[in-house]
View (cartoon, rainbow, N blue to C red):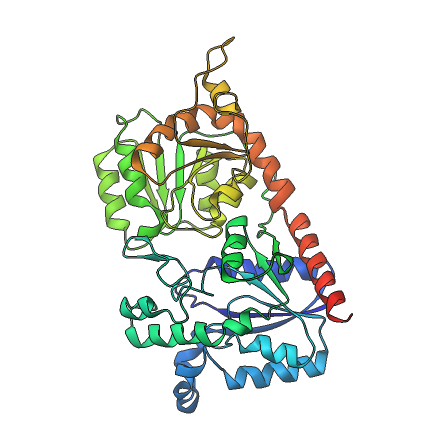
Length: 421
């Protein structure tokens, strides 16, 4: 099987989980015997472009002529079975879908964000969830609020691009939704069920987990949408040291907030940005990983890393988080799950779960509210050891590269077969 993987890489100065996932997926497919033809552009190319090329940049999200020429030549020369698109902006343009279809090549797209509708791709503005552009022919609110790169002009261009390419997106042969929440987003956009398949990302297996450590770990961008304010508010509702240690790792605009909180309390440690070895060490030291996003986070990779390491997750009930921890399907009644039993005295049935905490297969989810999160923290600490094997089992069954890569190849095979009927 021969697959073109098309992706516009985000700037390397801004670490991108999407770049990492695309690289890993190419490696996993190649290892499985698939011939991968990368069609990659990078936003880092922009500063070194010629003046004529830069002059065309404003229209490139709508139509990138050089990319179409290069892709067309690749398709004619190699005759691939499928084109798999990730991010098209700004140097590829969604027009690559039309270019592929012109040559009879079906298109699969992995949906990493909400940019079919939202100019920023986040459904998040001014510190709160925003879906003002849903259902509009043109995303005027995005222009008014400068949602794309803080520029009204660039926001107008992106809103126009989304309007122009609505028929393009609806012609994609198969959408890969990373979670059930993304599948719902696509249905809301008008994509029929038969063209949506849920397939998460995978991360390499780190090996047999170590026994759980102690306390909690937050690992991610230190930005408003990741819920640092929410987490710190909930944490402060408990006496210093009552829950064991809280470790926060990462970097971003809210770093001063975290540093100040660490200076206030002995049970809070700021680890700063970590390399891979540092991430492994932080996971080893901790018992529960926190995912406290206050936006509809699509697929926070840190959750998959936690599950792979046998660490259950306490997260907010937004976006893909319930799917990742296995809380998007009905669970046993409150008071009967492993977390409650773990904290109950021997011989008792256990207390009822505090209101607002939902059990998942590999953790817990709560409303993105300080009181709900504060109530869930001791429950998660008490249930961490009991949930650790379930976390690892969910990773091996759902997010292991062997499982996910086979699923992706099956998608390619089905799309290619249907295209040639």
